[in-house]
Length: 386
Length: 136
Image (cartoon, rainbow over all chains, first blue to last red; front, top):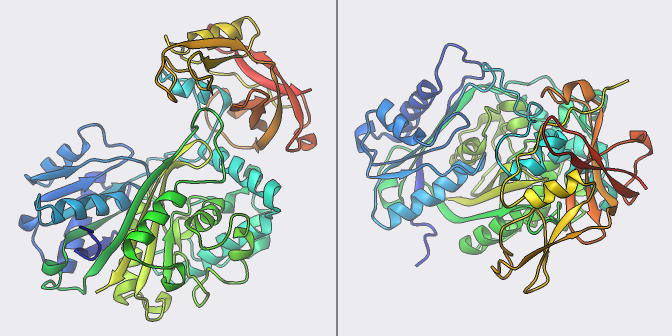
């Protein structure tokens, strides 16, 4: 029996902070929980399921979070598959609610990545004791470098240009200018991206997401219960998860997890690409957006460069992507998946003011966790108005 | 002039020791399954195609072609910070595997995808060297 349409996101909250050196990560999560519960009109006492993941959360992270909130949930999910985790948590929570394991799930994220000066993109290196790492660490693979390997290969195979990648960054910044909470709002042009310093060729500084502090929360419950709450329910219509990795040693760098998870999510929802009003995709780097849109099937492999050009992924275009400004311009506290869902929910409720996608009824959210060039996870949700 | 990369030591264990000991002899060692013939990399204790443990090691030709590469201008990790810009790449080995590596001994501006390369071995901070590649 399909889960499609049986559960809903009832509450959503994005913490407005982008810089919070005086706050702890647990505090940001608790403040976000307060926001999402107030949004839907539920109390912390109604919560009987808890899901979270984080860069600095250890094995016992969700237990420590439950203690901080003095919660004793009857369902826990500490799935950590990188930045896509929270997209997956929504589907996991939906399955648990549908199976009767719990009724109200709180999904939380909080991070002080920026004020901790966490070098997410360019600070990796070293051997370590993990034998798998032995084939990566000695070579100075950075997060940016991993995506740059994919970008270079895409350029070689399909003629994709740095200008086309830059269009993505420019579009996200244009969206951020309409979002009062976005960290980077000054408009940029393609020439600004190309003139910014190279981090790992062919990716420039402005091809890379920002690093901020921040957090967010989602409340998931049954569609029936959500209909009695304060805000219009956003139904979970489809979901999918996937991994892509080194396989037996010959990874296809241009076929990413989104191909599998997106196909599954769209089929489950019974939705075609043309039905979707907007898309939120993890934009860790400009190439991530291009590769994700291709692999989700919005265009054919190799056509991503043309697809992202000409305003097609901007507000008013054929498929608006990340109207909030995404990780490239709004916020990126280390793991960004929760914001993909939050923005999709806000858009479907029609509460986005100047950045509202007019009449949005159907949205797709896709998170990537890990690094495209080495190993990563993908999680997709198709969400719709009731 | 940037310094050479100070490669961190790779951690070897029972599954990967043959690979690293090969590297110490100047050989690029790959695995082939004695039961189903599948070549796999990175090394594992069993063939994950058929789950046989009849794993055989063989010396690869060390020849390959550049599949993709990036000139890394920023890496804050010690050993790499001083070596920027350096070249990170995937090389397609003749035997099939596509390996992550560094390309050394050439002007990064002269690199192009498809370039023939051959293996070389660079010392690390530990017992074993790591395979790197040079233009052939």
